[in-house]
Length: 71
Image 1 (cartoon, helix red, strand yellow):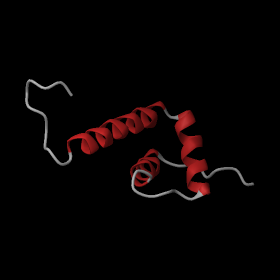
Image 2 (image 1 turned 30 degrees about the vertical axis):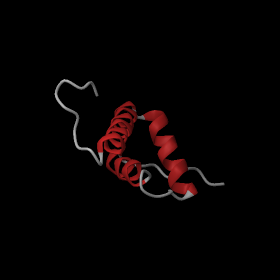
Image 3 (image 1 turned 135 degrees about the horizontal axis):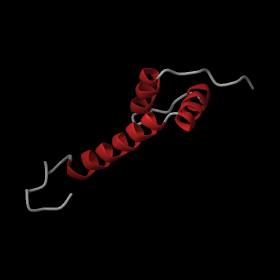
């Protein structure tokens, strides 16, 4: 197996977003995993995307919570 391709943060962000809708290829998965291991900013961005995805699933049909409802 070859070494994972080196990604820029912009390319990594594109893959992080895309993986929430569709499966990445094994090469893309390896490259992203390798990048996330080394890039703190992208790890934070990935966690933010996870949070937003959870909110979208939770409130997608009902809209945002009322101001007094905790998120």
